[in-house]
Length: 425
Ligand code: SF4
Ligand code: SF4
Image 1 (cartoon, rainbow, N blue to C red):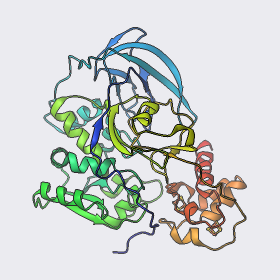
Image 2 (image 1 turned 60 degrees about the vertical axis):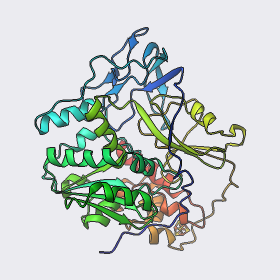
Image 3 (image 1 turned 30 degrees about the vertical axis):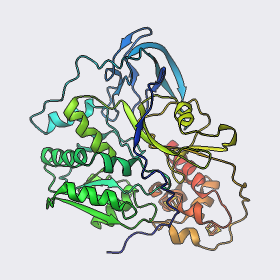
Image 4 (image 1 turned 45 degrees about the vertical axis):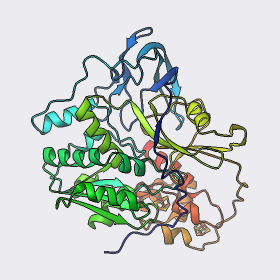
């Protein structure tokens, strides 16, 4: 089967051999009530309330949302408005740690006897896609259609990021057990774990751990960006096309991130919901690139200090990978459930943007065969009909088109704004 197009990038996976380090407990955490796609949560706590680790402190009545839990034990010292990296605001709960990390007394491994109880337990865990998208996990587990394939996204195709790779090396048993548990409860007959070929050790470890189980196949994917984009991964593994407006489940597929699977198994064994985050810290302004584990809500500044970031040299701070991550405006922002990396880079020579020279490179690399130049022009005219005709909503914002453009056209930025424009209509 022919694979979708993409681009070859320098992998820069220099933290691949850096095991996760658990950092000292922060004095305070700031926990945003929106760390997922879907409805934000409402704080369930009051000022000066004592909380324990794993206690639910934010929830929403909406099914398309994810509960939020205290990541440290201590006292609620502020409930404040918080400006997220995308410019929107949500509530956030500040907890001052008592240093004890007392677990919430009512936590215990969830008991379930059927599919509905299993999904309800996943919902209570606060699980979201840990690859960066933050899609509430329980929502994915309630499809209308019969699911034939569970695909585990372990591609980790963005440069620099190695947190999934480390999880595969350190938590292989949890990953395979989690897959088996989910396949059994959702009656899914086959699972594919898609890993880029630049992670041979993770592939070897998972293959050994799966122990020739005929229901679980580890697929070695070519290291071509954006191999980990959901639509690309589904096509490259199953040959199925998720059309515009469809969900993967409409094609009989559920895709979940590999670190999400590892977390779910730990949750089912201990009852502890999602309260910590493991992530990669890297970039040329960082002297100690590393993988760390911290409580959700820890300040990025503390993590960057551990990584020996040269703050005065930083010109670009990115949450996530260099291709699809979001620029961060400041250091004193909390690490959220979806932060799989923080990258700090020194000054690049500013790129000069010139007129499109119609070279066609952007068309040649787009994995979805979209027309980036025409989309940019249609957005400039705010032409809704034209944007729809060009299938703007299919764009994954992968950035391949911008990356190859010799005229340095800000194509992906234009596409992001165009998608917002269509949503607002
Ligand atoms: S950002 Fe959109 S238009 Fe550009 S290559 Fe990716 S999918 Fe295609
Ligand atoms: S790659 Fe850049 S210069 Fe070439 S056609 Fe696309 S937008 Fe124009």
